[in-house]
Length: 516
Image 1 (tube, helix red, strand yellow):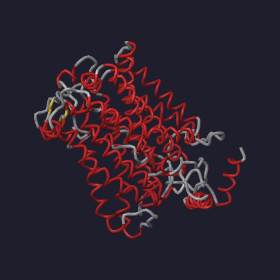
Image 2 (cartoon, helix red, strand yellow; image 1 turned 180 degrees about the vertical axis):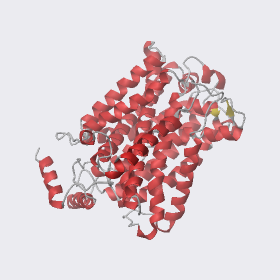
Image 3 (cartoon, helix red, strand yellow; image 1 turned 120 degrees about the horizontal axis):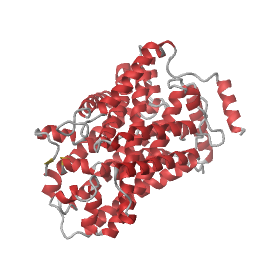
Image 4 (cartoon, one colour; image 1 turned 135 degrees about the vertical axis):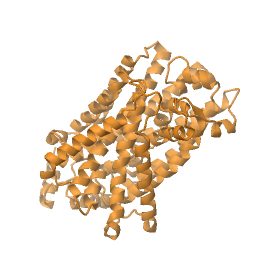
């Protein structure tokens, strides 16, 4: 049996050869180590979605912006729309299983101005990837900080939280430096950590409290502490909790050059990571909301922004609350590690095609581990910089999550739109939607346009330096930078994804790497 596929050895070998042949057809050598199974590919995206990260790090936001109805009705509504986006992406992934993912798809699907489509898709994907890494690891820093505070009295001021943030980003960079085997193993563990963790947390919150909120409260209670008077507007803004959690599943596409049977495993990884997260995340949100003992005190007591910690304490007592926080921190640690992995592969592929400053440096492969080590540290440092505004803005974290959503989803929608525009010229891979391609695709594009506008809007009133949503600024800076650079220079030399060489030259690259 082949240890990566679980299939007979001969079938496993032919799968490796088909993957390499497909990569050669796209013009790339097999530089990265192809050792990930289909389950590991799914595990990367599932880990980055991380319901124990997104749901709980934005839970305080949800309690202020819409409340239980936004979290527990908004979650399945958003989950269904995200599944539609994922289905449309998965179909394209099956045709082009490469680490470049979205920007490569755009280059191949555009009939006119392909380099421009590819360029802007890549830059939106880059800002979204850096934003999602920042959002995940900042959430991890929050929860690690409160756990350390409970255990050792660690300070909870912004500066000390930034210190924790720097440490976890460094650890995630370090883990990703050691090679894909370790990352794949930890991602496999992460799936079970998340599933068992949700069962433990929800089980404790169901069994221990003397009081639980009614079903009416869990599913219909509305809360507005934003300063805005329009309830419908507040409900829509509150969808950020769910929409932010459902991000990063393009990781399955970025890992396809390291996955066996990638043209099927990649698409399945995208879709299944969304579906499993939808079900498990809804259970988690319902369980936490039902366990609320005192809405006001748990929202505002003690360490601001850590409402879930105080819900755990009031429902289960201090020691079991610390256990639940440990479970959450562990899940978020896995999540951040996987985000750096996926982010670095996107940076590696984009720089392979010369689209980043100092591309030759970022594209460099560590020949011992066959991982893009320099890109790993680009991802970690970029995320650290994006999180620094928290030092002066208590709502900066919410802006980071908006940046992640806007950047990633625009990058998701562009190749979906181009696939629709290509019509029958699109060459389907072995995993496709058949007659449903157009309906699914257009719904996905319309949803992305809607949320991209929505999450650039102000979240809290009155608007000040402390409440300002700087997501439009961050996204705008990237668009202006990428746009000006393209108009002034890149349009003259960026031609989209580069072909690394002839089949003979690609084979020579592979032989050199395999001989080390």
